[in-house]
Image (tube, rainbow, N blue to C red):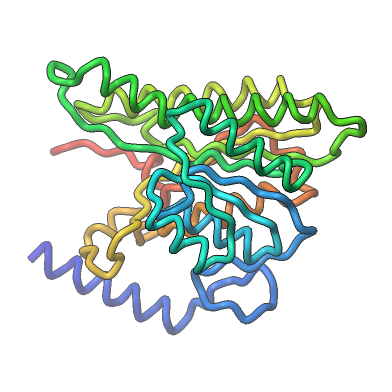
Length: 284
């Protein structure tokens, strides 16, 4: 009966949503729901881990906003496909290789003169019992999820320091996770990396203030990057927002944070999880 109830409630929600709710558009562009359609002065954007999922949505959102976008990823096949589909510039890079990541940024800076926006999105998930995880795997997660955000930020700061005239605009957005404050067994490496992203964000916000760069992070909850239609009704209904998140939910916030007038949002973490971290859950 519980499953049937959830199915009926989800059907009612879908009907109500289709009949009474019209998705808000950020601009009167006629874009279909789920897309990001904001236009602001063209910016030079660099995204790490932009081939798939959230990263791909971020790349597409900034291209659609009229920006010049470059992204890096270790997945060359998907990277080339995303570049062709979105109209962005792809750089095959393993971000655990600090020299390769800095060389990628050097090429972009040389071609563009500067980078206005960095989205540190790249990340891998690790689930292994603490009695079994090796130090090598733990280090790999840190080297993928946390260290690149420091490397890209430092490289941009050093470049800004060398400019004869200051660039009055800059944004860095680090993709964190709601797991920085919530965990389950076997996720020590991932939780460590995302907790580090949160702390790194507010430290960078202070260090980069003189370069006119704001630094914020976004903590996604459940963002489905696979087959959204395969989700169950109770997957959606457990969320106070009554649906599982989509990559575009994160991309929209990235675009909002990069609007010129939003420079007073600085050093913050913004959780986008459909309200899940606000629920008090006990097993009866």
